[in-house]
Length: 421
Image 1: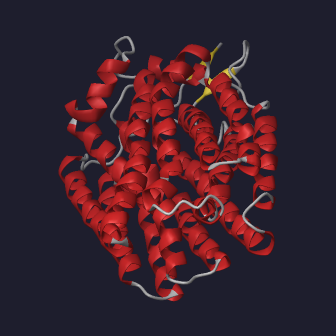
Image 2: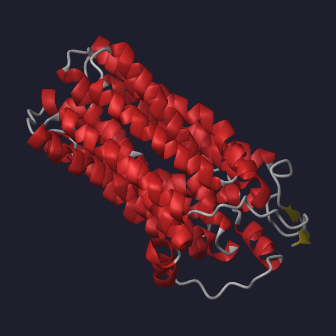
């Protein structure tokens, strides 16, 4: 189902499973690029570069989040103008230098620069795997394919977080753990060469849509997703808080655990357990939201995140923290794929990529808030108080989501349509 002249274009997972499976594999490589940092880069700043401020130590996450958020904002527009495949390829070309810079970085500023590139890589590559799967799947299976996509990405995050922690414990923080990143970047670029563009699927779905789309406008879509449409705003603020929590888990948790005497291998286990649970469970949570609706999954997931984050702050042992990060993974699995599907439910197919891009802009802006905000609170009040503050914010986000998100289940897809091109 490649969209070339003389071939048929049919929406559906079964009809397009080969390309969907290829994109799932590519997103595992994309997720692995983040995972190589999660156990060790926060500690790299403290131990190798002498960064004593928590805010400064997690500044690389803020840089990553800012770059990814801005890239997300324009990725959808770029993909409509250039093709999804070209944008995906560009993302990998930008990601190739990242592990090399981390290996050779002579100062902390170089690490921050590597994360600027990593943010652009993630904004382009992850965005395109999301959009291309939704293009092919159709409305009825949108949550399911998003679950597959996010599961592959975050299981890879977990695997790389664990492996780099183990390698760092044996050989040191640099350079050995980052050799895996070199292999990931090369493999992801090679697989992308096999991808076919999915823009023809968007055109076909739009032709069968009940309403007609106005000419695409980033300014109008930004306003709709940010404040004008409550259902879209509700998803955006929930996504922002979700990634604020992820920034906390990425940057603050390893420093907190290290301050409590855990070794690198155990920190690696905790850093891996959270995205592993998050990743695996998304295989079911995205599909479940297609059936029961988006609102219950989002609200319940945010509340569970709030409980888990508080448990991290109150805990004083590895076992307690392990339970907490597992619960955090369950809560995030409920929220993460569901929010993208919720945005997609509410917009015209021709505006989907741009709308999801704006949502992902706000969602990944949460990385910046999580890193800098929680880091500043940790410097001012200590780790525990900063973590408790984030838990309270998460509970407030759940209340807003309950008041704004749609109570209905996703609309059924129109009958399958085939268009000869």
